Length: 208
Image (cartoon, rainbow, N blue to C red; front, side, top):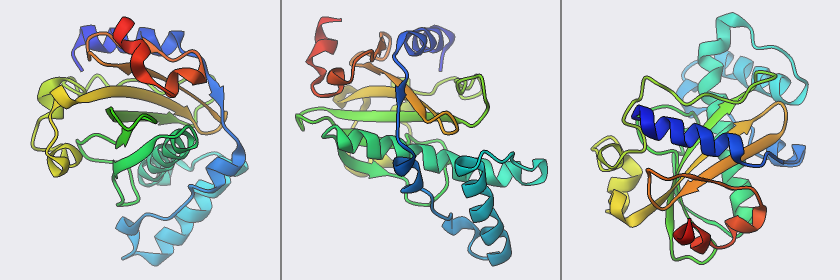
């Protein structure tokens, strides 16, 4: 995302409240990635590795880190989706490949009023003492050009454009069982979510 948008998003996330989520939510999202089904031994190893990392706090072996991180990213997306469903949100699109990668938006969900479609970008980490960072490499992320680009399968599938949606950036700390987020009606002005009641109706964004 451009530097100005990235800075505004980081500021909003720092001001957001970190909410806890239960281990039951995490356990319900642990699943294998179909992308590795051609290598059953590696798949079985990653299943065990991810569960040990998230439930028992075991470290990720360096040799398997690059393979496991997309699986962990997918778990974080599933955790956030489950948490928002508990608040009345409705899933519209998610990536069902079982691993988090690619250029498109992570989730598309309707808010509880069913009147606003929200494109959601999920950042995750298992590193103690820090929240996940917003990537500098993907500099156009969450801009209208990126949302409307050909790589955004979810947007294209629904025939939606950046003018039709709201935005959320969420950070999920899988080991600490915490999450926080910011929301925006205008991509240039993300606002921190400090109370869960803000997730029930997004009218407050119009006054921000």
